[in-house]
Length: 470
Image 1 (cartoon, helix red, strand yellow):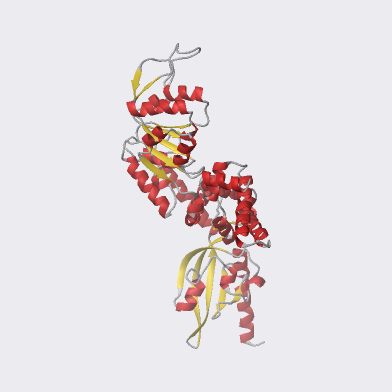
Image 2 (cartoon, one colour):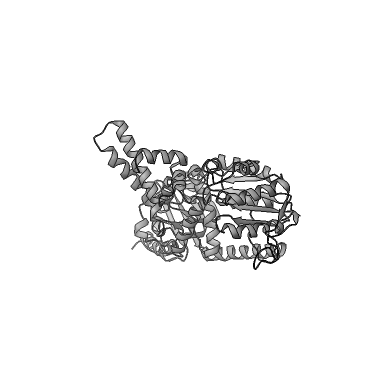
């Protein structure tokens, strides 16, 4: 055995049995050396890595973020750099790397990286930083646990129409005038209402929200205006939420569900600036800013007779329309990122991102439940994902099959109708009828929700239902 052969054997054993990871690629970016320590660090089989392009094994990296490729392209060594990435199995790795170019006859023929696993140290460091932040925040804030108070910075999204709504909301926060907010279920109406209050001059005064659809008329009147002892059997002296919100803001949710007789009394309060308790005779002055919300277009409610026209004009001093999620699909990535971070903390997870397949399905889904439905989907999937996984894939959305099947089912409806031997006008009518029937069934024949999901007015939907005898 020659000295060179002996040295080669020693070098091979050193490379494969050293307790630091060693990874070398050639000038074509293919792995030529991948020792056992590196395989253990990254949780991969060395046989599966050898002779493969590095970006094929590590899909979360690119030519700029990969230190090996960077050194291969520039010829400049990178020493003692921390790198965090996802490996082929979706596992999160943090390592301390030194990467150097390999030369042969003054030509770069590859790059060599020596890595030390610092994943555990990085995790401890992050936990320490989080703990320090929590302690720092605790010193500055009141320790009393209370209801979350939202402001405009809590409204996530960069969509043009959403930004327009936020702009109007900020102007509304500076004004004592009434505000009318229209948005579909789950689009964030209370988020806007709270933001208007807590960024306005009344922020240190009460904010009270009342759902007008949840309480019967006979009880709602007493809740709003209070009761006077002796006014009726069992009545006691009790202030209503108008009195409790004096100087502050009262949010009346689903105002179109309030009985018309009660709407008349509400209109009088807004015009006169005082209330009278149920069974009482004394007028009590109140200074309350009203923010009314509705999940149905206000004009449609007026036409249907569920919202008094004079009350509508009194409330509609400042009008905010919140775009549904299907009209701001460009905000889905940033919303997903926000909810992932939120539930990482709540569920003690370490999720990084959505898979491309899931993100594509999200962008093709109609989102009848809007942002609330999106948040619930993310929360659900993060309850199913395992501790060592960091990418939310389709299989974790166990409770959300409808999101991934809706696009296919819609396509099948279209194809069934297109394949029929009919003239074009008849094909279009068949497609329209099939989609209306399908959407009606999905929404349990609720006309308002179906019209919203189809993107048409309620009257238009009713006209088409009559036309197709649905």
